[in-house]
Length: 81
Length: 81
Length: 147
Length: 147
Image (cartoon, rainbow over all chains, first blue to last red; front, side, top):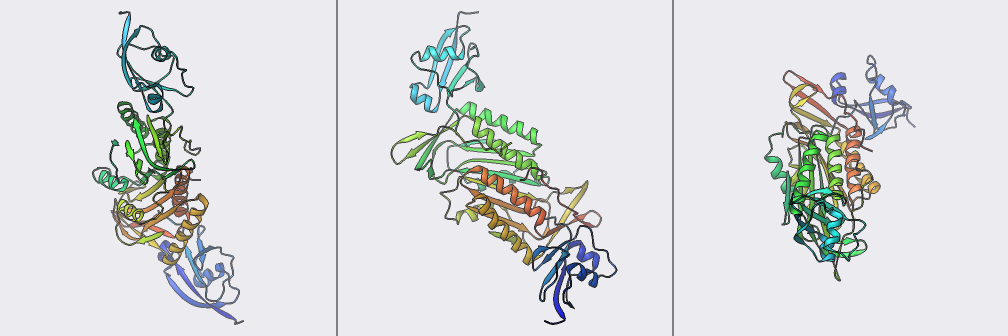
């Protein structure tokens, strides 16, 4: 098992604008959680209270550990319909 | 006030077929109720348990007294929609 | 508005036509529509057709009053009821109820409540044509979640 | 079926077209349709337009799963969801949910529940264009009667 894994990270809607990030691919340490990934990308930002996260296009939570090749998304409450 | 009044009587759906009456106009005594009117028209028939009645195109009940010129209707439970 | 029709109607064409003529189009947030259609099967039997009898003056008056009170009760922008009478074939639309409102809860509540009132009180009666003979439908089943 | 559209659509034309192609037409007794439309007014402000952002792969997957589970849960004959993305004008249809079933309770229950799930979970976000500037819609209001 390698020491680092590759992850694609996506931000949507107000998060995309607020954090200035849209679609990033990066290498992170094995066993990184979705919460830690956010802090790696945005060390100076607080994680918004009402954040939603998805892992490989399904709802997940900040405590989940990322696997190699995962796509992680951060977005605010949804407002469709 | 006259001794008799004129009333139009209508039957619908299975009542129309069952009782062989559709649209009748007749004279009845003053103070006749909707129940008595049914018995005058159909002395040998029992009043069905689930009868609905209307007076001048609005729901009414068997105990109501008929006025001159009224239109009285008898029909079974409705099944539209 | 209430429309009683003796001819087959296309519910979606009626919706398109009716809505295009209204002046509240920029205020509508929610439209809830219910369409009841004739099935070719009921109570375990094949049904090849149906006759719908009504009490013309009372049916129209009842449905007009239902539209008026529902618009007021649910704060609707509009309410449309279309009902067929006469001879019906399987897959024909029998009834359409459409409710327009600013927000979705009112449109959902109203369309279901209007249908329930219509099915329990509007003077309309169905007679089904079976393979052998015909029969009057005896009653409508209430919708426990309607109110 | 799920359709995500970047162009204006006529909900009633879509209904007519979709339904005409199905083989369950003689089994349908009930169709419940909800259409959400853009209003020119929200939270006390005039709104002249709207952008709807989505997460293409996840939005489609989420809605497809919602259709599948709803058909099973409510014993529907079919379920159709259409949602706009991109640039929207007042009076444009934003969303359509249609549910077809044998009896009315299932279609009513399902259409309302599908809308509620869609509004609370489907990855879609609205940004309103105001007279001055624009703003993201912060949240959807739950429908207390939805389930």
